[in-house]
Image (cartoon, rainbow, N blue to C red; front, side, top):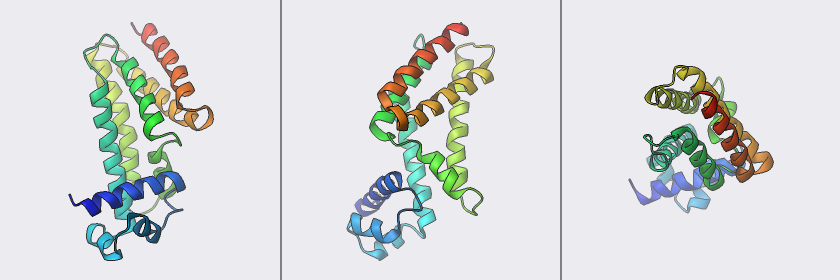
Length: 182
């Protein structure tokens, strides 16, 4: 990957996250990335294409982060996931979920943005379902839904009470969930 492409993606992600997808134009991204207009178009055919790639990279970073933070064979990987998600929120997602913003901004449009964002949420549910299966839980789909809702709620509450407090509450709830499924 080229340095300029990486810079465009980094600047675009920051601006989209801070100002929303609709609140940022390509001129602002080009200016802040300090690249020529043609450089952007050499790497991305449109703003939608740039948004798609920003979301793909963010999702890849999120899953890579979880993979490095969570030991699946630990006694309670569910708690580790909640803790790791809380750290991610503090470091990367203190203003809420970029994927939910994408779903809101691009719902019903003819592009892949909404599909990428919805796919991220579906992958989270599947992740917890597989984790529950691996741990021999009988109610794996219910547990997956509960933990997915827990993480989504934690993400939402981050904008209201901060990542640390939201994570503290979600860890307590996760412990209760784990105890009731043992």
